[in-house]
Amino acid sequence: MFKVAVPSYLEEEYAQILAISEDADKLDAQWNDWRIKSAKRIKQMEQMGMQIERIIIHPTALQKYCEENDLAIIGSSRAEMAQELMKGGR
Image (cartoon, rainbow, N blue to C red):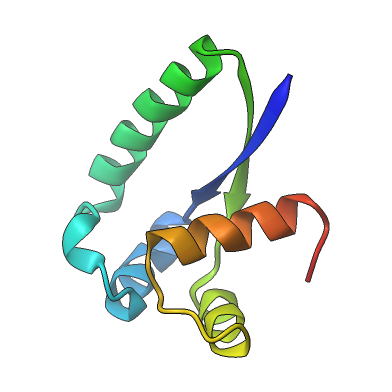
C-alpha cells in the first residue's frame, strides 16, 4: 500500500500557519473549515488505496524548514516537510 504524509495543523496554531504562509489565500480562513475539507480529502485518498499518515506541522518548525531549504512557505513546502517528517527526517 502506498503511504502518503498529509500535513495537519493544530487548531491553536492554525492562525500562525495562515500568517506565515504565502498562499494563505488558498487555505481556509477557519481551522474547522480546513479540518472538514481535509477529512474529506483523506477519505477519498484512502478509498483509492492510499495509506494516510497525518503529520502535525508546527509554524515555527515550518518557518525553519523553509528557511533552511530556501523554500517559499506554500502548500508544496508544507507537503514536502510532512513527507520528510514521516520518513523520520529532521
